Image (tube, rainbow, N blue to C red; front, side, top):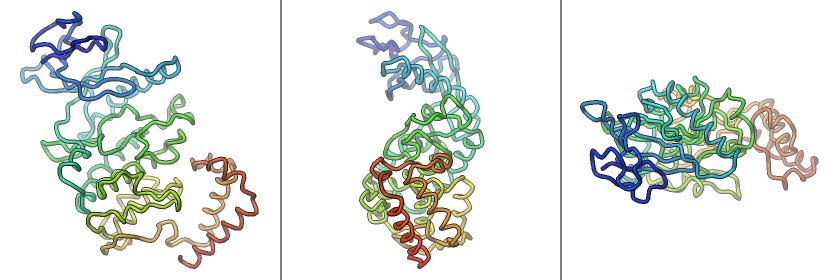
Length: 368
C-alpha cells in the first residue's frame, strides 16, 4: 500500500506503485525515493509513518516524520519548528551511535518539512512488558548496562533527551540491543533559545520534578530512566508507585519478585526528587552497578533512603540549608536547579522551617 501524506486527504490509502494519490492527486513519493506505507503515530508536532526506500534494490524500511503541528498560535508553532529542526540536527550527530536511529534525510517538499530515519524493527518496552510480564532484576540490570552508555553518549554531546520512557525504547530484533528513539523532545544543554525556564516537555509519569518546571538537566534523563525501570518491575504507572502524602517512593511494595538492596539503592537514588541528591552523571550510576560496589547486594524489597547514608554533619548542614533556601524561595534553589515549592509552602514562617529542619538533622544524625 502507498499512503498519501497530505494531512487533508479524505482517503489516503492507495495501491502499491501508484505515483500520485487517486483521491487528492498529491505526490506519493518523497525526494523520488521514499514511499510511506502506513501511519504509526501522531503527536502535537507531527505524524510518523513506516516507509520504504525505493532507491535501493532491497527496498529497506525507514521512518518518515512529517512536521505537522496541531497547536495554534505563532509562538507555539515557532517552538515546534525549532524542535523539529533541532531533532534533525541532533540525529545527524547522535545517529552515529549504533543504538540511536540514523538520520537518512531532512528536506522540505510541498511546503512541509520531513525527516527520514532508520527503521528499528522490534517491540518497544511497553509492548514487551505487556507480552512478557514484569521484568526481574537481571533484565533491569541488563537494561541499565545497555542504555546508560547511550545516555552518556548523548550527554557528552550536550543533548538531554527529555522523554525517556518504555515507549521510546525499542528492543531491536536483530541483536536484542535496546535502542533509544524519538529525539523530538530533546534539547541542547547549551542552547540559549531552548534553555529558558517554563518549557515543560516530556511524558508526565516519567518526567523529573525540575523538568516539569522547565529546567531539564542531565540528571533529568537519569530520573526518567529510573522511573522506566520501576514501571517495568511493577507493571504500574510511576504515579501509582509514589506516595504523595509522605513524599516517598513505595514501588518496592508492588514488586513481582524481590530485588537486591544494591539495585533498590541505585533506583531510589536515580529517583531522588531533589536534583542535588540524585546521580549527577551516568558514570556515577555505572560505578554503583559494578559487582564490587560498596553498596550491599543482598535480596531485599526495601531500603533506607539513600540521602541519609554516610552523611557527615557538614554535608547534612549543607543539604538542609539548600532545602531551607528552596522552601523560602531564595536564589540558591534556582542556581542549583532545585524545584521550587508550591506557593503555600513559601508562606511558612522561617522560624518554623528552622525548627523542622533541625528535627530532620536530628533524625539524620541518629541514623534514622
